[in-house]
Length: 283
Length: 280
Image 1 (cartoon, chains in turn red, blue):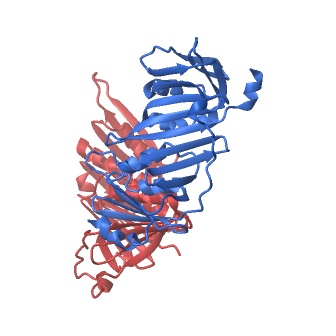
Image 2 (cartoon, chains in turn orange, yellow):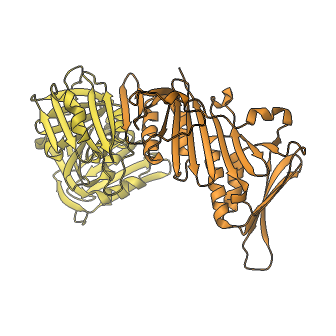
Image 3 (cartoon, rainbow over the protein chains, first blue to last red):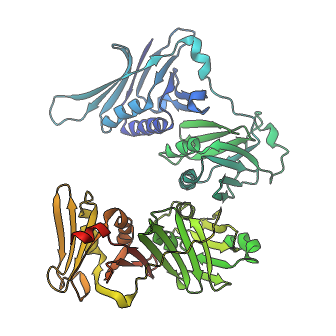
């Protein structure tokens, strides 16, 4: 098992830092899956995490100037680590204006991801800040838990409104209720609703548009659907808030797929990064 | 317009409809009196009065005149209800209460009378939020019987000067003592905290002092915990009038200028701390 990578370009470094920061806002721990072509941050929907799952995919070539990987075995050329994204984010914070950052899988007292940031100096002596971040190596027999989730057979798929607007609304609703109903139809309309003993609040978004999903399955149910008919799911409002809080960049595309009364599937696309987030329904 | 089509159905039975182009003109002033959940709303053709009370010792009133609203229609002489102010404020600021120039949230507020919820229609950038907040039977606000003929001392200050003093007040002191006198020290704020006593004196000819009308030396103590909420009003205001009556009751009137330059008033009444009076 061997992994080493290097970022030189400051744009790439900032971009990578933003992605890691976003992940760290979404979850305390997650799986970092390293393959020859990609990095994945994965959270599988365990009960402990409230059933939320996440899948974030980055193409390594867009971030790293050097990238060497030797997986656990030739037929399984991958490494799977359990990491605390907050630690990664903290290491990257000190590397903000580094000349280069090297990331290496090392064996210290325990397996570590070692971040070595070479900082600019005025003298000839180099300054290097090193963070050893403890990680857990996930054995191969558990890998099946961290496969890419399939797009659920949704009832309605809709583009999200500007995330900042949505965040403001959800933040206020969070003060009023623990649960939120998100509903949408194929007419580009989406509503966020809460209802308590004291108050009921509904925010209506319209003209959002519905993404055209190709013929590759997954849109089966929405084909012959009445465009006015709402598909709705009631979710834990904190999970949605967490998702919205983590967003540091306005993605080029943000979508939401709703499986009526079962799950919402949020997708953000930003250049070469895609983030998928699944929030299960609560009764 | 979105708002009007949405509200068509409720308009028939309303007893009160009030609209604002900029919801901040209402939400900001309500923030200045938010220290308890329950607020008593009383609407008359003159406008809206919102009252919040604490421990029968403190009362805050916000007045929003009918002219502040773009539309203010009331079908009865007086409409009253009680509502959860924290919930109302969350609803009014549902779009985040943006301060970005040119981005405002419009509000249309409807009430159909006793037993009905207060309905709010809020719109920003084409997005509409409808809120229905349950109302309760209004309680009668306490009458502090503070009447201007009994006022012993009165000063009007630029809020700026009080803000500074309040931000530096020793909050470990249980009371704030206010001395007003026709002779020195004229206007004095005193605290008695863990780290010693502190006095703030305002000379009567200070630029910050717009009016000084003190007829008799008066020293009263007020619970710091009761006065603390009034700093929210102070922060928003440009002028403040401090008055005490013969019983030592304190009235603080804040003049608040809203985003559109219109003037509203917020007023706090506070009872003096009785134990303290015996010491003096």
